[in-house]
Image 1 (spheres, each protein chain N blue to C red):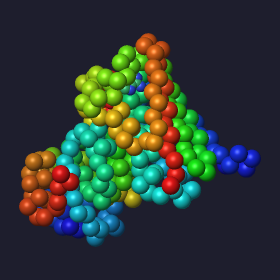
Image 2: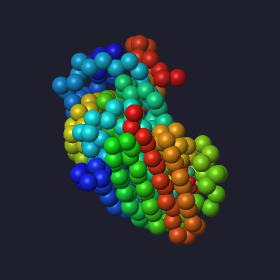
Image 3: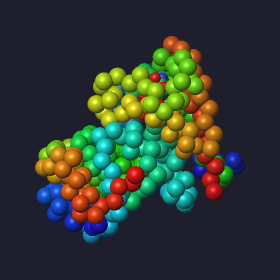
Image 4: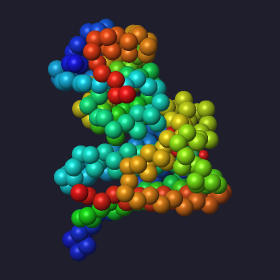
Length: 144
Length: 114
Ligand SMILES: Nc1ncnc2c1ncn2[C@@H]1O[C@H](COP(=O)(O)OP(=O)(O)OP(=O)(O)O)[C@@H](O)[C@H]1O
Ligand SMILES: [Mg+2]
């Protein structure tokens, strides 16, 4: 915790295809929010959205980073990846739309529910993407 | 329904979290698709799944699910058990299919989410 700004920053790396480590950032964030005494429902929404975003990098992109900033009133999470990008974000946001590979589906994902679920679990969700470059997902949740 | 009763109905072994065997769960959800599990709003539930990988445990961790039944005689890996124990989860392993496990638990009074 930075005493000047009353904020805390965390960063993590994500590797495409590495399902074993997907969820470590979410798990860390969950622990930190618990220690800060944030209420359970709020924490659940935040970590589910982050976990979905992480799995998307693992499933669809090559590599990425997670940047988390927590202050008194909110948590801001930026998940940035280098990858194929999303050509049509509106289409990708539709429940059921998925281009997931067979391998991803064998891992228990690829229902096309992740992006709508991130929308549901965040107060603000901003997705920017460039084809063949990558995708940036910004999520903000306010504490009660 | 107590986890103890669930274990009895499913002829299941407890591979982690035996100390939580008297905890109550009200509802069950059967799925091999973690994408769907992550969309649920309920948390005091038991997840019944044939998906035996670390992501099943991670999903349960994020979704605040405290008990998982692994069906079709699948065994949790050491890595899965470690993560589950760390998070205070109870892992049961049943020899029955997903269909049979779900049916038996429904019959025994475990409620569906929808
Ligand atoms: N970071 C990303 N990079 C490239 N494409 C992405 C990324 N995130 C999502 N997509 C694209 O958007 C689609 C929908 O994403 P969404 O998370 O909703 O579903 P999914 O990942 O396919 O399945 P689920 O999340 O249900 O496991 C993906 O199938 C993929 O085509
Ligand atoms: Mg997804």
